[in-house]
Length: 349
Image 1 (tube, rainbow, N blue to C red):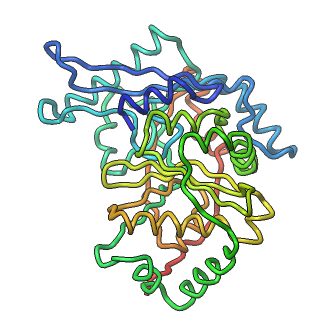
Image 2 (image 1 turned 180 degrees about the horizontal axis):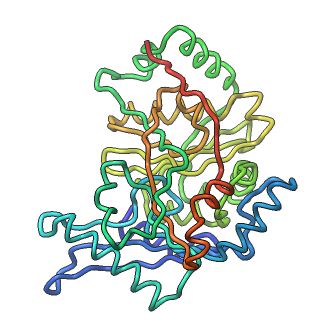
């Protein structure tokens, strides 16, 4: 996710309210590290989507308190995708001050933002953010990253399903039966382009239904992903006759699969249990192609736990430029950040 191919995607088709910058770190003329920065503009973007009084109030305060935001990391993916360094020539203790300097450089040379955020670190990283440079930052955690480790003895999808307890095995098989009559196929670049309009509408059905959203993808984003990422980006569509009724996308990231954006027709989702079937198809793809892990991200936590994904806690750092607002950041953040109550399911025997 810090490759030249992916950076070309961000340059070509990042969301309308997002600007991306790429920074290199050099020692004796040699590139030893890189970092991704994203600027998000919230002036014209409705972060909270539902047309209710509470959401309108939240949008009002969010817009006043955070007109714009700079992220060290990638707001389009879950996980630490913000920087990479050659640790054979540098230690973590050397890296952290460089990241702080890079943040200051961006704020000085590109532009100052209301808020600065470091995004998505696992708990063992806390110790590296305890120095003087980070005293004014609030450490926060919103929702966990859902991950599924694929066991070596799952040689087929049937092995995986058979590892479920009776309740969840029956549920999965029932969902599979409901997909009868639906054709699933992988789309090429030309096919993605041919279905561009339907793809965007299906994506919007899901994105606009979310209670919290900091950006929306443009119409050509999936084409750009396929054009630049090639076989590392996979697009799977679900068809009822000739009609595209749903899709999901994957990024192949070394031994991991990162689940990416998806979309579906709301009526078909209810009738065919499209979303659950998509999750099961993602697992089947991972097992068939011998990947080690599937990273499902931080949405729809409970249903993802029903197919075996488990939560991994991640944290971020946030600081407001206004010292007074920053003093109350903990209270402000908890009042406007989305909270989800969920029950972790345990599907395996």
